[in-house]
Length: 81
Image 1 (cartoon, rainbow, N blue to C red):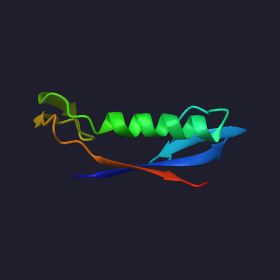
Image 2 (cartoon, one colour; image 1 turned 45 degrees about the horizontal axis):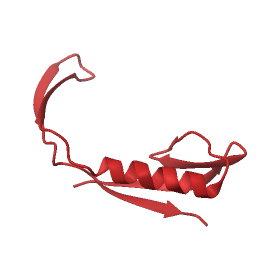
Image 3 (cartoon, rainbow, N blue to C red; image 1 turned 135 degrees about the horizontal axis):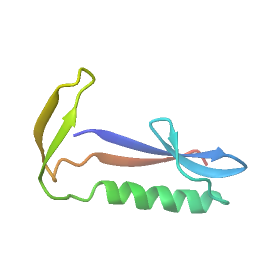
Image 4 (cartoon, one colour; image 1 turned 90 degrees about the vertical axis):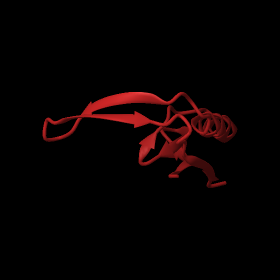
């Protein structure tokens, strides 16, 4: 199981959360960004349906795999405050 960290940071004259270097939208307050990060983190852990997925790799080869709906990451919200 993988781990995903949501980090609360100051961003664009407000607050945001960051995951793997990608920022969320900017929120006016720290509390709003924290609440949004907690909601997103909780939602990401919710199991889904097992489905077949197809994708093309960087060499142009297509792959078909089964993605388990129960294979959800563990999430953590890291607050700088």
